[in-house]
Amino acid sequence: MIPFISRSALSEQAVWVEELSKAMPHEEIALLSELTAEQKQDCDVAIVANPDPQDLLELPSLRWVHSVWAGVERMVQKLSSPRFSIVRLVDPNLAATMSEAVLAWTLFLHRDMPTYAQQQSKKQWIGQPMVFPQDRRIGVLGLGELGKLSAQRLANNGFSVSGWSRNQKQVDGVSCLHGESGLISLLSQSDIIVCLLPLTAQTKGLLNRERLAHLPVGASIINFARGPIIDDDALLERLDCNALSHAVLDVFMQEPLPQEHRYWEHPSVSVLPHISAPTSPSSASSIVAKNINHYRLTAEIPLAVDPVLGY
Image 1: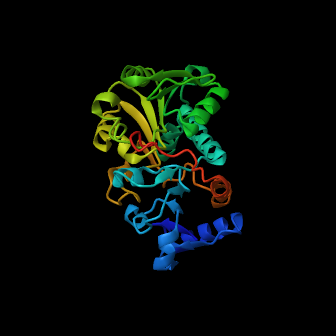
Image 2: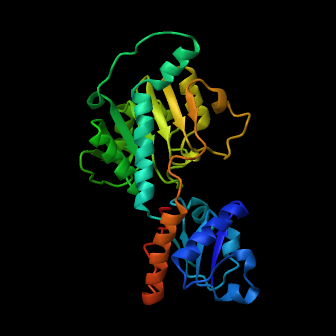
């Protein structure tokens, strides 16, 4: 028996159980609430989607959990010393979907779509100066699976792309920087910043007043990572004084974004409902099934999250 554990709506959980069951017909997949006390005692693996970490403690024999989300920060932060391993979803389809969103919204900013939308509301007919892609400097924060492919896709579309990561990396067509000095250098030379960092103790509040001040006047931000990476008050201050021209935000400190939040009606903010790279239940279930099948045959747990690094 493999429990599926999530905080999502029951209708969404039912979709996951159906897809996982189709991908693993030899396994029995059920919601945690449907398991008996005896069955919970025997579970050595669980499949999760942003679960309540306390639910996992109901499974005393648990060796590892397989997330169907790329982000696992809630479990890492709430479970200081878990007795089981946490495995993230690494889905090439997810990375491709994210790179598509990054390219789309980079083009949105590159071709001055926010300006034209505001001009339309005022019935203004004004052409903005044209900037060629090779003259538009894009900085990608985070060069993991999502960031690497996104940076390469931007570079393949002619943009001048730099990337930043905690440790030195190499990505074809991308100028790679690392460390605090590399971060400041990247920010100071980027017209558009794309944030794809994992949320960890080190990245929470990374883009604060001091670091945002290094961005060139008129720069823009895309955050497709996690809301707490950006200091909301600092970002709003930079937007209010026109030091930054626009922010495309798909993730927030609190989700759904509260109705009273300033982002909703700010003329220099585009609000998205966390849709930049939704997980495909079908694709993810196939990957989970492959990993669990391998575990059943070899007892080997897939590459797990480093609890210290948080990813």
